[in-house]
Length: 207
Image (cartoon, rainbow, N blue to C red; front, side, top):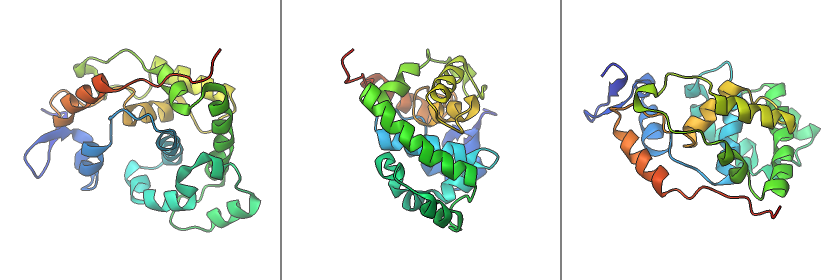
């Protein structure tokens, strides 16, 4: 049971939820459940890139500010951000004021538009990299994988920035491309059920 945290309700969850009170709700309601919505996928990949070198607690606390600053991660709107808007973002104390990461989000929004034209949706592209299921005893033992390395490489080839294998692996964990809840966590079975019901997105563009 050393891989779990016993929350105030007396139930076991992944050990990292003990790191901050707000982690429990995020873990129970979001982390690991499969996602097919393009804007949610784009948001998470952007937030993971902002997290690089920081803690998820910092990013989660600022998430509403990020959403307000980046048009709720509507990549069609973010792609139109100009130099003036970049300077405004750099003055925004509610987000992480890192020029390279801010510019990467705008760049990646443009790349997202291109990918949607190519694949029909971001979801169809990302879910193509869903790996084989991990055994429960392997949960949260990795920070990268063959699948995250392959997806990161594909994104970089398409011009995306700040999408290294570790960032991409965290994205895959959170968006349900793998079930990385530990064996005794109350959410592992819930996520398994959702993943079994989940209809994998397919490209809507005819080859």
